[in-house]
Image (cartoon, rainbow, N blue to C red):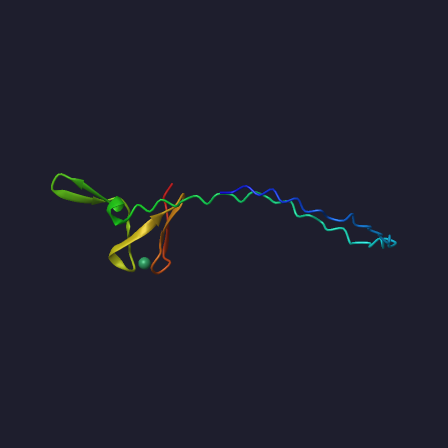
Length: 96
Ligand SMILES: [Zn+2]
């Protein structure tokens, strides 16, 4: 690598800038949207069908009631005050 220090002699530029009258553009003020931080999506815990069964010795206990319309195998979702069937929409209110 040979170092070549080449000095370029640049002639002084005679810059004659014409100052143009600046046009003041009236820009509509942008209403900046407040960038709200996106709430992180909570991962819904998928428990799977095995969470609905509980093996007690030789017997299998079902932790959810089954749908009366759809029959066995159709579990009902456990809500605060009711059970609902996701298959047919059957709702059974809990006895309080
Ligand atoms: Zn049902």
